[in-house]
Image (cartoon, rainbow, N blue to C red; front, side, top):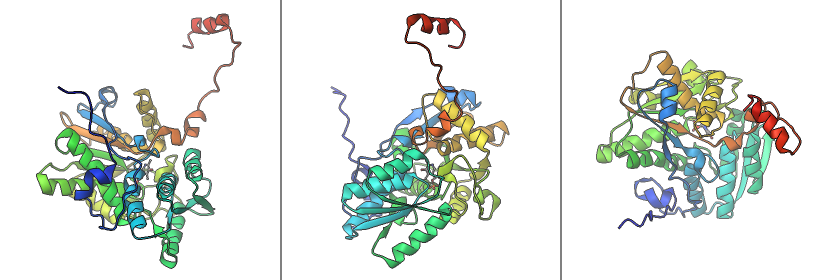
Length: 359
Ligand SMILES: *Cc1c(COP(=O)(O)O)cnc(C)c1O
């Protein structure tokens, strides 16, 4: 009899260590990340004219609200096992919150360097809550990344940006989960691209699984914001601009790998406007899935390609990765909202409003 009891989830290292390239000395530090839902979104598919089986891999359901936790469990586990007492990262926000949480869990110190004024409030609050030392620099994410690389070279502090190879080893587990759930790889995978660690990780995961058990390979649609699209333009962007702050990166660390993943998978990397991103964020929210702007970018790219008839996905299986939770960046929603109507606390007043067609 099925008692309805599932195997308890123990985090991505416990589940996938055999297929992760993690050194022996790594001591697992976990917050039970991963195992995120793969949500079918048929209405949303219809709304964008996608006659396919469309799924959202909702990575906002990780412990600190973004996919960064998958890579962070691996990076921190390795750093702890090697005896590092402190970690450092540059961040547009989510990496900081994740590094701070896992460092706290491991009893390590955490230093994060963020670009000034461009980090969503919910992300910064996370890093502070977990006890990280947060330093804001008068510069871009790319400047912050240059600095932390140099800090880690001069001091006994482990670098946990996605230049750290163990981050990719952790992040690739999302590809394994998708295959485990669907039975094989989807036809297409759409996702946002910022520093390009995630697209690199997914491709690593899918190619590794396919070599092992023939689970197939998706075509990859990587999507950047048009004000911050170095991989589409073919050169770094000096002053990247976009509402999607998590992908506001002008010089991706994994640029080469990202271009290769797109090419080898017979996919591509495109850019969409901030308006397209915000429209998709809204459409997703109206389907019950609230993500931060960057996280809507992959699907916005799919909608864009469908609209311009550059992709034929009829009857196929498509997975869109939604990388982080909407609660991280509530400002972007409330800013464009009228303040709620204020009325007396009476039934009459409420019913008067209900009679008006504002409801
Ligand atoms: C980090 C991040 C991205 C970009 O991922 P890269 O690996 O830098 O390409 C996208 N969305 C969210 C929510 C993120 O936190």
